[in-house]
Length: 458
Image (cartoon, rainbow, N blue to C red):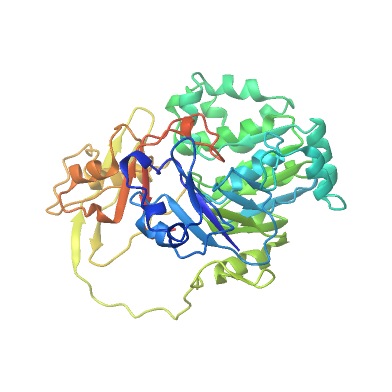
């Protein structure tokens, strides 16, 4: 089995010579394996395609994927039209348990949520879907009763978005106003106490840090009166203490509600999930959601890269954790030494002792949010000046900030070349995209200015 996927945002037929059709062996023998639609873009017949991959290599915009599928896969649960992304399988959600999804981005997790929330009807690879067909397909399974309620419109859904740094663009005002507008269960005070939000309730949303925005988004999701809760990545920007508190909160919600969690932190996923679905596939091509597995089994299989029940290898190499006795200390050269310093703000002060950085050393900083780790790094990097005297290092320093802000609407290669003329741009392409023009699983209302597509990387 194979599917052909066309990235319509990359495909630009007016700027090419129709290489996909010109070099296709089947077309050259007279078959209509590739034809062009009304929009001028190719339509690839999956039944007639022999999987030679010539069109994939000849397309100047890397817009075509010919993907071989495991033979055991049935028809897709949903497909975004001809030569569009295909989703196989759905996660099961049940009241009284937390269902986790473990897998890379871009393989249909958001599509699953759209279907489970009733915003999208599965079409099973056809043109249009119907709830009658869905109920017939899931007849006799644990999901039949759930989809019956979805079809009747009686399922209420609460969703925590993945990109919390976009919240200030969608809402202007104070934290208290946002949370009070979402409090449908009358438990706002309890959520504020458990998530430690009392000191930011009267601050503007635009002034909050990433960790504070993450906790506000989780509180807003949990405050709604819903039957199905979806939490998309709860760990970014949170320290370990905050992650544990959020995990405990989600487990409390799941006592009488259905909860679905997408999380890449294996420790947190292990802590809060009752069952886990492993998601695999090819980003933007197809995605497969496995049957539910025990948490320990799912995580171990994902690390090994092989799913024995499905007889599928999802990664060429396993992820192994090295175990070795303590290494003997050896003398290494000192790269730079810094004196003790302090940095004072209106409501915060930091004091750092003297120290040094060694050649070939990776130095980690551990601690909760809000105690000055970022300020410490900014001072060393020269982004901030200490109160005593300027840091004078005879070395060049590259600093990656915690929060990435895109404020330039230009291709990535030009941006990188402006930083260093040594950047090799032959390994990637840049294109400008706007979410409002994309179809499929991208439902966020906020525009993305720059998208980077790395060749050969998944």
